[in-house]
Structures are given as C-alpha cells and as structure tokens.
Amino acid sequence: MNDLSNEADVQLIPLDRITVINPRIRNKRVFSEIIENIAEVGLKRPITVTRRDDPDGPRYDLVCGQGRLEAYQALGQHEIPAIVVVADTEDCMVMSLVENLARRQHRAIDLLHDIQGLKERGYNDSTIACKTGLTIEYVRAVLRLLQRGEHRLLRAVEAGQIPVSIAVEIASATESETQAILQQAYEKKLLRGHKLIAARRLVEQRQRRGKGLRAKGIQNGKRQRPLSSTALIRAYQEDVDRKRLLIRKAEATRNRLVFVTEALRKLFGDQNFGNLLRAEGLETLPRNLATRIEAASA
Image 1 (cartoon, rainbow, N blue to C red):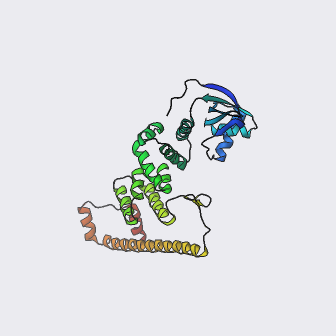
Image 2: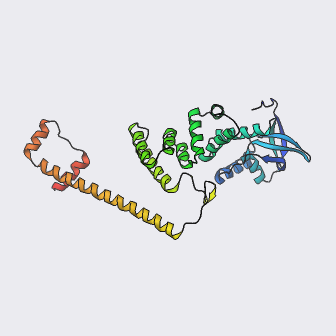
Image 3: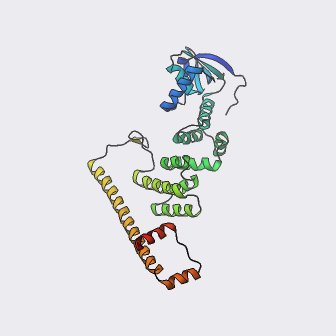
C-alpha cells in the first residue's frame, strides 16, 4: 500500500461528484437513525474521499462514510464536508475494506467477504491479520471456509456458536466423521449445553440445505427454482419421519423411567435393602427420582 499524503484538506464536495467504489447494503433501521441524527445535530465527522481528475472536472472516490453520504442525499443536501486525501484506487479500496472490518456493527457475511476482498487484492495472510486486528490462524481458517463456500459454517463462527477450528474440521469431514468431531468437541469442553445443540442443528441444516445461505431465493449466486409438489411432499415426509423418531425415543425413555421407578420402589420397601444402603452411606436420591417413587407408592 502506498503512503498517503500527510496533508488532509476538508472541503465542501458536491454529492453528484462522489463515487462509492465499495458500496454496502445498509440496514434500514440503522440508516434511518443516521439520517435522524444528522438532521438533529449535524455531521459530526466528515467523510473521506480522494480526488481524481476527469475531462469534465474533478471527481472524488469515497474512502469512508457511505452512510453519512447517503444520509445527506436523503436529506436533500447538495454538498457534504469531506477530508480529501491522496491515494490511488487500490489504496482507497483497502481503506474502505478495513473501515468496514473495524465497524462495531456489521453483518457476519460482510466481514468475512471483506477478508476475502483483501486476499484477492494480493495481501498475504499475515498482512490481512495485521490490518484487521484478527489472528493469522483465524484469517487462514476464514479464507479456507470461504473458498469452499461454507457460508453456513462461517455465520455460526462469527455468531460465536462454534469455534473456527471446529468449523474447519466439519467442512472437511464426511457425515459420520462430523458426529465424531462434535463428540470430541464436547469431551474437550469446546461445545457444551446450548452451543452443542446449536452445532448439531447447524450440521443437520448443512446436510439438508447445503453449505450456502439462502437470501431472497438466491443461494451461492444462483436463483433457486420454486419447490415442486414432489419436493414439498418429500420435505414434509422427512419432517414427519423425524417427529416419529423423536416420539419413539421419548416413549422408550419414559418406559425405562417407569421401570426404574417401580424397581426402586420395591427395593426401598425391602428392610434389608434399606439397611444395606444406610451401611454404605447411600441414604439420598435425586429429588426428581425420589418424588416419582413417592408418587408411585401413594
């Protein structure tokens, strides 16, 4: 990356002379808050642009501040305060990507694709890690998952549902190996409780719906065809089969619990068995089990 000029000049720039070189899709609620804030208190921080000369006069490429620029446009303004820096198009693109990475609120997929954007512009893993404040191991894992189109796993990583190391292992594993990976993660205390449940659900969705994420009928850059009646029936049947399996498991668990409760109730009615338990110091039971035994004895 080239060295930027040390001189920063704040100017009023016509909005129609500014080009957004790295456009972002913005959350409507957040954008409306930006507009409201600027309308009430004004612009707190100028946008950043770089100048380039055109035959019809100077034009400017946006480096930082797309939200502020669009808010000014929405408010009907014609000019906006801007800091003019000296940088080529490549530098502007990288500065814009790094700013997106540094934002407190961003979409997970945007963050991950920004890492990929830096890689495509020729930056090595260590440089990307330095620019973004991420570890080099994280950057390498993210790039590996992006190359494989594992957007579903990447979203789970960014949301903190699974460690990035586990996501990389899942991406390279078969269906049977995936279950072993989750078991090992549980034993190593990397996935416990709600996170383990979420990870199992994620693996199931990945196997059924694919690696990518759907958005408005589009997945992996391709528009999805409407589901046929056959596909709908198959999906419905799969859902019915899963529910039947859950019911069978629940019934089996209930039957085992009834058997254990009844067996313990009869054993506790035996005085010799009671004496043996007291001699061994085994005089207490889990509350739920004790309640069931008392209810069965009533």
